[in-house]
Length: 297
Image (cartoon, rainbow, N blue to C red; front, top):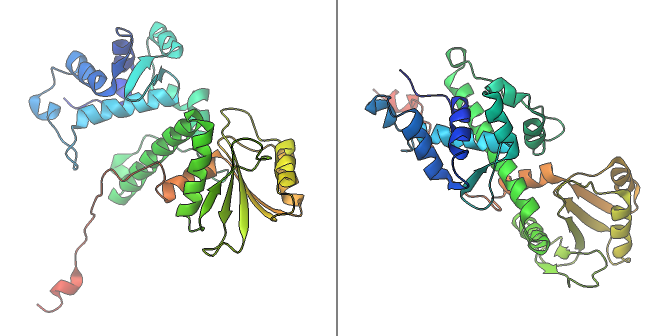
């Protein structure tokens, strides 16, 4: 007997959610464990990860996270889960394999939102026998990082637009720019913030932040942003949680001003890099033999 893989918990998770309106993530994991896996040996049920977490509970929670990416479940508010209409339809069909999820349009779109255009989504079942320990570590960290970034982008799309503007200024401050000024929320002419390019404030950079869920930033938005600079500066940063259409990219590229465009993918990459809106959960130490120690033997 062995513990289920995270993707083998998909259907049990959906079945439990079908019996409740909403439930906390931890309570969901416990119910899945108790209803579907209680017959496993105690040593398996009590098995811990290197960080001290229960392995089975951890896998169920990962299963829930992947179901969220595919819109089979939803998070109506912090810490709770509920079954989505798509999940109800899946219960009717009676199965959801890992391959089904990998090919699901919502899942692909969700994960793609945080990938740079240079990267391809690679979600494969790892061949443990033919992978080095370093391969397994790298793949694990990559998976966790993608999950965090997708959740971060979702959160950015939900927060108050004014707070989103402040998040952007905090990020730029973390990136080493000088002090920032939040502009008035009325009559600001399309400028959300002003940051100092240097610590002394000799050069100004204007910012515009658009918290879009689906809409793309269009050429008109870039044109209005450039016009709002009114000759005060030639440098601007336009940030969005979505993407820019081709006309907007072309307008920014051909403008006499220096306009930097940051889409949702690049934004969460920067926030992850500079620890804005995320925090370190666990630190692992990987040790190797110190050959220098034994040279004097």
